[in-house]
Amino acid sequence: MTTVAQADTIKTLTTHYIDGVFVESHGREVMDVIKPTNGKVIARVTLGDEEDTRRAIAAAKRAFAEFNRTTKEERSRYLRQLHEAVSARIDDLTDVMIEEYGGVARFARLIVESGVTAFAAAEKGLQELPLKQSWGKTTVTLEPVGVAGLITAWNANALFICLKLASALAAGCTVVIKPSEMSSLQTRVMVEALNAAGLPSGVYNVVTGLGTTVGAELVRNPDVAKISFTGSVAVGETIMRDGAATMKRVTLELGGKSPTIVLDDAALDKAIPSALILAFLNSGQACAAGTRLLVPKSRLAEVKRAIQEGMRAYTVGDPADSSIMVGPMVSQKQYERVESYIRKGIEEGAEVLVGGEGRPKGLEAGYFVKPTVFVNVKNDMTIAQEEIFGPVLSVIAYDSEDEAIRIANDSKYGLHSAVMGTDLERARRVASQLRAGRVVINNMTDDPQAPWGGFKYSGVGREYGKYGIEAFLEPKAILE
Ligand code: NAD
Image (tube, rainbow, N blue to C red):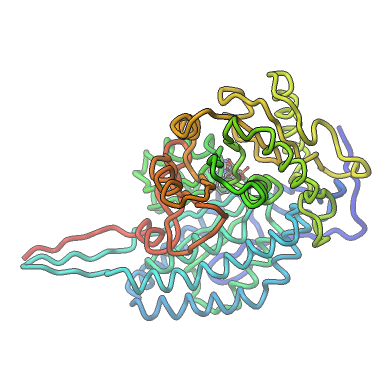
């Protein structure tokens, strides 16, 4: 057995949030929370079990009887209360995100702020969505689907909780949230913030626990009508398969291997820094990360120089330091996963331009890897096909625009893409041919009313704005 060092003070978390109050866990299993910058235990969390989950589902079901009849105005008011309550804790949420999983300061704050924005965006989306339409003798209403199970990944837990909760409540659903067990400290601060909003009891409930216990109970339970999930393809497949037994509606936000196409007319002094931001977003632990960089063969030498220059900014170290661009991987397992892909890239014949295997000098204690850029990558190599979920970029050279589009689409994923070029008409033409749920032109940008979600293995359904709310609604027609 390996022993793990402990921090001087260790927090303990033993409660879930059910029916408007913090209650002691029925589940007894205890999990260590390990700080990724030094590998020390900083907290112990008592995990929920199936019984905790069933209690939370029962509370959500009781609350649904009232909540599903609330008006748009009432739900809008609740969304404003949540917006205000979570806004008040932005600093705390950012700090705990940095501590618990090593998210770099600038990205952590952005994630938390996006979560806050989600409440305002859902309020706007709700106003734009006609919940009742009539013609002739027909009336169609959009009704809340029922109790929803919201299951999150660890890499932006605060954002996923806010986004899914905002959409579900806007639709009139009540929920049970199962946050990633690797985000227990962040979840605790989030639940304190949500609790301060003063919503009716049982409307949202939170049970922290493992996917195979709490998550599986949500997927299996006949009183849960809908699962909204963010995580890996493997678990997404399980949810779709096991949810079929109770005809669950599902929204699945899964992985990606996003291409960034640099067109031959791109200004490299702008395009490459933008491409690097996309690639190394959240230390590469981002579903949208642009981890395949497609560049014209004719400009490969220039691109390599621009990358080497640009990568000097990608400092690795303590994520609490605001000058740091790349923090540690979330866990030992994730560290080993990223290292194994770097090894695989070398074995398959790709050339390391920047970075490589092993920990950066002076950062031996935590789960740090070297931000790595491979060149001479072929799109059929493992590092170009599989999601690594770490700071590893593959540069692939192409001969023509058509070939660039073909390579970009030659992936099982289709979540996010980017096109960089000077001629905007041309960039739009290329964007229109990419099989992805979202394409950005010339820069990473966002619009909380625009849909988010994947083609192919990147998922099923959409989140954000009115699209996200629709995912929690059922159309119902009354004909006279
Ligand atoms: P994961 O699939 O391991 O876990 C996600 C959640 O599912 C966790 O809460 C986990 O406890 C739960 N879970 C595990 N087994 C379950 C089961 N059998 N039934 C129900 N729930 C179960 O993913 P992760 O490691 O937390 O996150 C990384 C993955 O998430 C990456 O693939 C990444 O691309 C993806 N992701 C996608 C998006 C998106 O918007 N598309 C955003 C962020 C992350």
